[in-house]
Length: 286
Length: 306
Image 1 (tube, chains in turn orange, green):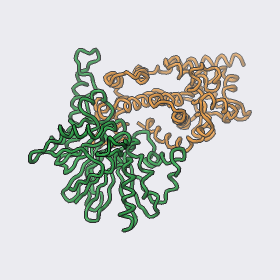
Image 2 (cartoon, each protein chain N blue to C red):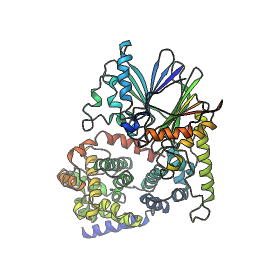
Image 3 (cartoon, chains in turn purple, red):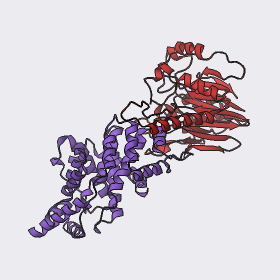
Image 4 (tube, each protein chain N blue to C red):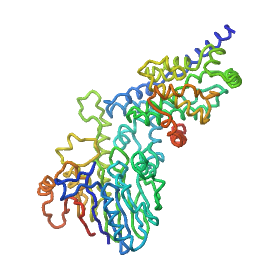
């Protein structure tokens, strides 16, 4: 058993080594978006370094959201007409999804349903952040934290099906069964990926501690709690699939208090989540 | 024939009081009457729409149920806050169509406008209204017939959220709105000495800004009446770049270039007193020579016949 676990862990570490680095573009876009003093020149330059990303951003801008009469054909034009913030948000969401989508190889978690779960947690986290009164320029961070929280499940191979089966049959938390059978849980795997991608500390915390919030640093707990609540919400409502067999209701009160929210805030996002998922899915289609 | 009446001319927040009595303290609301039937078009639901609603109850309702088309320039609060106080929405039989843009990531127009009618903000919930209200999202569109020969064009404006300018044309007369709007500008670094300077960006940024401002002028070219954002003076603009508004000087110059017949300066800053506006009028609204644009500061209650 011990040997088998060690072998599993090695396999996962090898998988992560081979995962593509977060492209320089995405790293830079993340950096620029987290600074309030970034200039239009910097934003423009960083996006245009990646022609694929540039194309996707322009396609999105010309999509149903804006329907300007004349198509926008350059980033300079997009920034002049729609402003820095709009272009920043689009670039960020597109870049992140571009670098993660498609890297999920396990049959245990069908890609499309896993992504619906991830997007669901992203939009729910953002809606909860709005309820919490998080300033508009910080909300995107909640969306991305939610989107990436389960990134640690991506490297698991087909043996993950067995983990899901046992967790379901024995009604146990997924992280426990992962530790027992794979010697590592998806939070820890996620942290390894976050380190490789040089994600921010808060982002890494939400990936690493969304099932163990008390281990997160105090400054990050509000974000981690909101992501955990968003995860709970999406699991309760059966939106997409990420393998969690039973929503962890027991932790809800603690999470709400860390998040600075109450049950009514939690209930109030219902109805908006599905609609936001529809909107966010456009990023996957570009 | 079209008639225009201003029910609210202020920007940002209503500002009643002795210092604003002459020009009025209510937020944006314009009544447009079209043709012999007096078809009712309302632009914006700032606090001025309350008195328009009362007027309609007294003068229009006795002739039959109230029908109105409300065009919102955008959904910033000063342009929608009067909606819950527009009495016709409570009257069974009223038929209203609310048109307007919504921004990326926003909810539907109904949720944005109706969102202020929740118990935490207001004692009546949207769902309790007895009138029939239809919400229609608008985008930028070329001229099209909006029914009975009323031609409508919408134009994307430069403002922190999606805002639209409207152009209504009827039997050879035209009425345009262009607020809330800040002239497009080159956002890119233009100083060649700056380490991040990029010539291509600087040149294209300049070109796009010029072209978009030209498109704005084409949009309101030759209008019989243009209502244009003029919240600030050119001197005040220096510390208010990016707030999404224009200066009086810019509005006047643009209207002249575009051959506008009459220009109503609109969306006055809430801190602007009657005395200050009168002083500005003395500078800006000099009697025009024949063929020149006639300029005036819009005043609450003012009627303009087209």
